[in-house]
Length: 343
Ligand SMILES: Nc1ncnc2c1ncn2[C@@H]1O[C@H](COP(=O)(O)OP(=O)(O)O)[C@@H](O)[C@H]1O
Ligand SMILES: [Mg+2]
Image 1 (cartoon, rainbow, N blue to C red):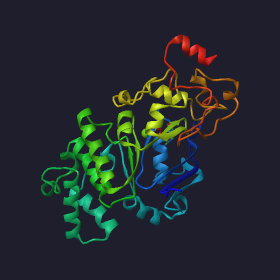
Image 2 (cartoon, helix red, strand yellow; image 1 turned 90 degrees about the vertical axis):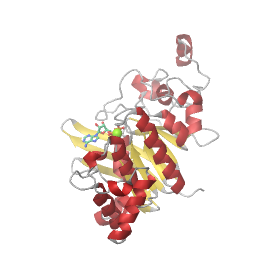
Image 3 (cartoon, rainbow, N blue to C red; image 1 turned 90 degrees about the horizontal axis):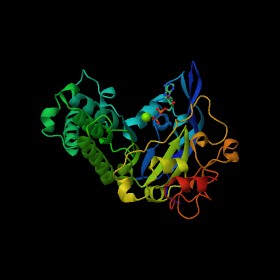
Image 4 (cartoon, helix red, strand yellow; image 1 turned 30 degrees about the vertical axis):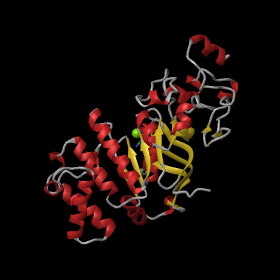
């Protein structure tokens, strides 16, 4: 058995809204090893951010609630911790980087103050030591003239520089786990690549485990060890990046890849869009949640919710009643063949 850093079991996070109960995350289980880099992919609304927020315990009651499940971090169930204990873990053991750094940076304090505050809070060092560490942290994320930048305010930084600060802040206390939720989506393409490379390089150097939520399949293919595919609050496929991209088992994954199974092509790809829309997570269909959009669906798919099952050989897992019969890997897209496999 390999060591486990994070173990999520049957996590369900719901929101009460006027329209009804939103089952944003609805029974997901997964494990992460120390230093493992996991990509989380899936269309908008599939529960990726709520998964991340649940781990960080940032779900706000009374509307939002983790209704059941466990989130074990180094063997300790985070859901049982008091707020103070959880606060200590946030930032020091588990850090999170959000899509928009302005939501996490306070506009009225200098970059230096905010960075030093985090460092003092989590490392208990003196102000002078914190200052040195803050300069070092900015240098690590390749911010020019780090000492001079300490006295500047967030609005004086570009979007890319602010995200570098967030990475510096996130990694300054050497967390065991870094959760990054579409950290570069708001940036221009060139800056996106630079920041993503920097973040993943720093995490790799420090052996920090990463949960990376992204639309960029190329980043997942290039930097993640493993990938989990989410759909309507559930995990529909899991495996090494190689397994999932070379040999997708779930029709949804296959759709996301845009029928593309050559890894060199995956490198250039973002998520492909699939015909139809995900179901409302207020009125989830009985059975497989992907069924209404699935060209391979059979009767059973509308009746029984498929569970994640091991795929023979390797570490891949898939939640699809038809995965065993379908060979999506060798499936080439012509309309005739679609019908052939679907019939
Ligand atoms: N605070 C909230 N109140 C009500 N519904 C929410 C809230 N946060 C998220 N949701 C809903 O939960 C579902 C999953 O959202 P999210 O995890 O943000 O998706 P994504 O995969 O795009 O990150 C969506 O249907 C979303 O509308
Ligand atoms: Mg999100």
